[in-house]
Image (tube, rainbow, N blue to C red; front, side, top):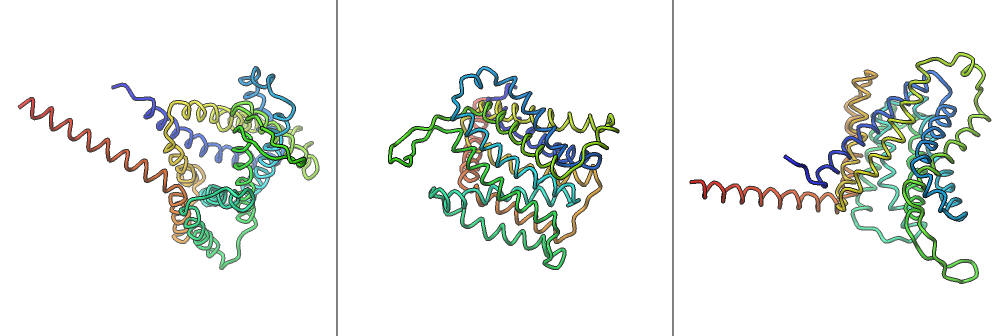
Length: 330
């Protein structure tokens, strides 16, 4: 049986979410052995170099303005990842952390509306109070005293939301009015060179922060094979290869329902944290994560409902064809 491009895309996106979950585990292992910001700097510089190799011809064709806009995305992304990795370093349950970070999906449309006046569907505003309830349930675990790591992941979610908006605006051609009142067109930065630029810039940002707040001597004086493995696995499998696979998967299908599959990431992270690190969650934490997952589905309800209708139509059509074939065979 030959799979259609749409089905191949869906299966590959499931693999992408699994690679994203593995990236959480690789990062957790790495920060147990080396300074977290140094790890992120090395990870993104290596991943950026790999992606730049694939995008080298397109990078040469970018204008100075396009390069600067790509670097701006990396500056915000690097700030978000700094909060993210420090949250992991502080020992927050990975499953819980993944669900908190996924709130960026809910926050992004709200920020786009407030700061960039982009119209948003009603489902966006319905998802926000549901997401807040999920966060409240997670914080109840400590009697409404959130842990520092939880706060870092919440902050990371907000910065990730800004990063998503900047990425979308940079990856698409748009027109805007400059300070002199002139209408100018900003050319898009293609996805692959944009990611190479943003990851390299994120590596520089986290490297500078590491240079200020961390010491490197002990790490490099006793650099072990395990450190090297977790670093390379994070940079290649969890970052560069994951992005290349996601780009290829999205190129196979014009359907937008694939974005719903990416909601699986925090689910895989929670399962992986249980299997890999023996991390479990209390009933209250599970309830909080479940409510956050519900908010993600509400936020993407337009896409979810479209995907469900398409699936139901295909099922009805398949049953009808099967009945016709059965009748002819009889």
